[in-house]
Structures are given as C-alpha cells and as structure tokens.
Length: 395
Image (cartoon, rainbow, N blue to C red; front, side):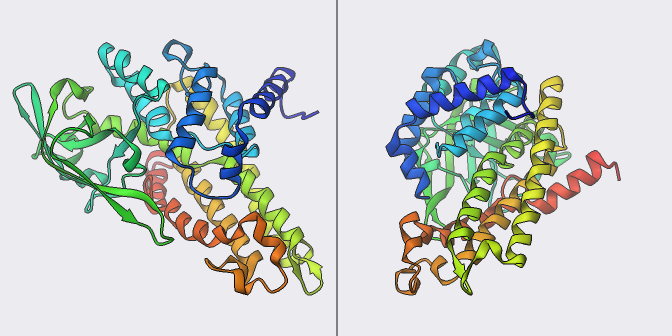
C-alpha cells in the first residue's frame, strides 16, 4: 500500500488506472510512447474521451463542468496519465483561458466560451509574445483601437504554439499608449477566421513545426470580446501565467522520463557492464531523482495553497524553474546514455546496440534540442528568479 495517500485517494488512483486501461486507445498511447508529436486528430480524440468522462478540465470546479478534484487527485491523475502514455492535455483553452474566463469573464462569456472548450468546438492558442516582447511582455506593441462597437487590431505575435490547429486566439493588446506600459494592456478574444489574420509556421531547430507567428492587419473584433475591463489586461495576464507556470512544471512527465532513463541505463552496456552500474552516471540519476521528489512535494503544497486562495501565487515561479531544469537534465542523461545512437540519423552508428532502435530513441536528439525552449517560454528562468526575489523574498 502506498502510505503517502489516504484510502480514498488510493481508491481514486485505482479508478483512474482502470479508466486508462479500458478507455485509452492503444493507437494513441503507442504514438505517445514512440515519442512523436501527437497529431491534432489524436489529441482531439483523447480530449473527447476525457470530456465525456468529465475529466478534461481537471482544475475546474463542478459549477463550470469540471470534476471538482482536490490537488492530490489532480496530481494522481497527471501521474497515472503519464505512466499510461496518454497525450498531455493541450493547456491553452483548458488550463489557461478557462480559469481566466471563470475569474474575469462576464456571464455571456462564461456561457459561451467554457462549454465550447469542453466540447472541443474551439481550439485556443495564446497570443502573448512578440518579436520585441518575450519575457519583457509589458513592452508589447500590438495595438487595439476602439472604433464604435469594435476594436481594430494591428501587430504581430510570435511563438504561437499549435496555432496551426487553432480556430481561436486570446491576445494581449495595447489599448493605451501613455503611462506605465503595464497599465495600457487589455485581454481580448479573437476568431482566427477574421479577415486580416495571417499565420506563418516557424521551423524549429530539430525540424518540427510546433510554433508560428501571427500577423494582424486591420483586424476588426467585437468589443464584447474584451475580457474584464479595458486596460486590465496586465492583471489578467499575470493570473493566467501563474496557471501556465504551474502546468509547465510537468511533474508527471518528468517522473515518466526518469523511469525511461533508468530503463535505458540498464539496457546500455559500457565497458562490459550496464550503464546504471557506473557510479558517476548513477550519481547523476540520483541527483535528478532527489530534485524531482522535492518538486513533487512543493507542487502539492502549492496546489493546496492555490485551492485556498483561488489561484496560484508567485511561488509558481519556483515550479517553473525547477520543473524545466529537471526536464532538461533528464534529456541530457538520455542523450549521454545513448551516445552516438542519440544522433538524429543513428542507424549506421548503433554498432551492435540495435536493441535500442525499436524504442525509437532516435527521437532523443530531437527531444533534447526541442526542450531547450523549456527554460525560456512561459517567462525565462532568469525572469522567474527576478519574480521570486521581488514577490516572495521581498528583496
């Protein structure tokens, strides 16, 4: 028996495991296990299965269609989904916009936006970063000018993750030019089918198409799409980012990755012995595992705090920093374990280690390069340390 959970929580874990065993399609888990990007069709199929069960929006209260779970239940669910190789839930609608609409949206927005997130009718993407405004988000320049019952938007957003799949985007726009930069920003919802919007793909270093840049040219958006009050966007943006940074920690995915690194180290033979028996490599694994266990505890503590306060606090910056550092460390360990076999085209370099090939470890190089982004997006780790210094340590 796992003594870290109560009997009720263990029963819940068993329920989640049973659900995943019977309802998670093999073709979906196989695609995730092989390390490739899940297609839009696979993601939508899994979202629909979770939505039917009422388990898609794990952080939402029951009044808005969520399961009303405790922080421990959410932790258990994430852990079990990762262990079963279920696709991660795309966060933009469920974990970012959903909480914002619940906290700042009007009754009409709650009635229209939230059900369409749960049903999968709308796929949202995030319009925050710009070419000159990434971690320094307050310097954004995309303008929204009021014209009668509409806003007219001009500008550019970049690093728009999975925007090629989306039909909607929530944006930060500048609605006032004078005063402090943070005081002139608003939060608005935009239909990507609106005339004047162009989305262009950005090819990443490992060759994938995950992010995009979005151009707005005289895009007319109804003023009723404004969330909260005009020029209240900075407050809403900070609220959303605390949810994003908690999600970026990805404790469950790091736990899964740790087990995969251990399994790989048992399989790889160096100097006639499994790599896991090499004291230097074993010490690296132990160091990451200790950090991960500490982060699991911190994550649960912050989730409990968020449940009392209604939203995560600035301490989520710690989760963002440690979570991304751990993920990158695990990628590095896998790359080191594979050696030449981690190359993007390793078939001629495996030299007797062909047993590694069926697990598709050729994707390890792509994962390593792709996940260099983790310590940058959602606010770079350097910025997060500044937030910790000011908001938590009060220095």
